[in-house]
Length: 535
Image 1 (cartoon, rainbow, N blue to C red):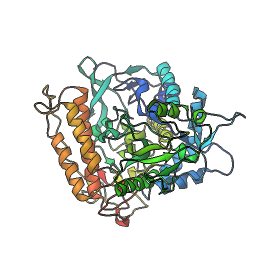
Image 2: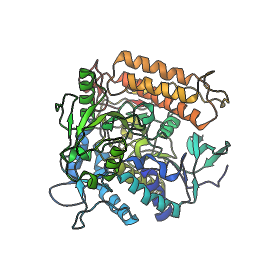
Image 3: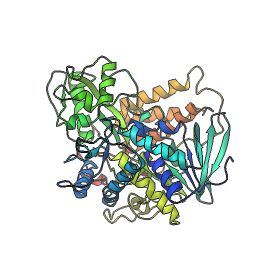
Image 4: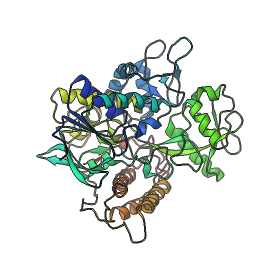
């Protein structure tokens, strides 16, 4: 054990975790620790380009419109109460971030510039540096955490949850010197992000390996909506990985999608799942590996989007003259650890927020630029619940499904019943780490790349029973391997654990809904208007 017990241990250093840490250490004077496998500024938050969706006042926009847009994108699986919390509390959280020093783009009159993105009926996206919003949000929060947190553990990899007497009491963690220690806390908040690295083509950084979700699955904590993997439709189709992202704001400003013959084929301002499917079908039809984003009609591109302009020119593209090759790339894990409206998981003492959780906000498909907002809202809500002495979940938000008290879906199966929507996931038991490589002559990196290729080919934008069967075998083959002692070895195990849940849920969801598309079940089926929960 390396610390006296903390009041709160935050796993991860993205917007959800850092927002919570600032609130806990500053407002409530808790003894707070932050544990991250990289450095504080390396979280997925800094890769977020589009901005933060929030109604900051003024006609004609309203929180009711923001709520309606979010519900529409979520394809029937959003929890309306959770979305109401998001849109009502979001503006105050944005203003708090500005008070911490975040510098969002403003017009000549000093007013915040608002962009429109796919799925939004009106411009309501605040942004920084055109397409550097995540980096600016993270900069402000990192500075605040460094001033207030009692214990910051960088380059520390959380291995497993410590569960004692039915309560989470911390984690075991692998440190940079190769030693494993317990980091104990009265409460643990999982904000470790998603699992975009399940796929060979992704916009996520290499650290996005689903670590928190995998730990929860192994500990029997409820996880849901994991089959809904959002693919961003406009990732730049180049060899670089993660793929450079061409922000949705480009289409909001008028950029057009064209196929390789030059024809338009989709409404560019549809939600991401709609656009990604349309692109994939058109690429299959034409035998192409990309389509084009035509931004040649946008004025002042370099001034509006300086980071994107720099990235494009580094690969020899001029957005004022060239159509930009794009293709869908894995971008966001819509599901995760099930929480109530205050961030409590099904395991007392364990909380979750941000991309690692399933709060009920996103449903089957996340509305653009709601991700940073979710972290900013629900991370601090967990802190407030801890301060209020809450212990264990309530039947609110997505947790209503788990507790069997969902009034919107009266046919819900009671908690503990294993049936159509409650699944017991079979994952490989934790064993003592092995110093051996996964297979003689095969490196951990090769195992990871093989897993990514299998998931991309068989459980990506388009799925069917046969392909999901191939993906399941590939995941199970990885889970059967001995676990090495390095961070890379544990990351592969976590990817395979989350991948197994993703494939299993996708196989069980015999319909197409939101970010989950089955070629063999192309219609949305009312019989699947429920979450698939792993318990």
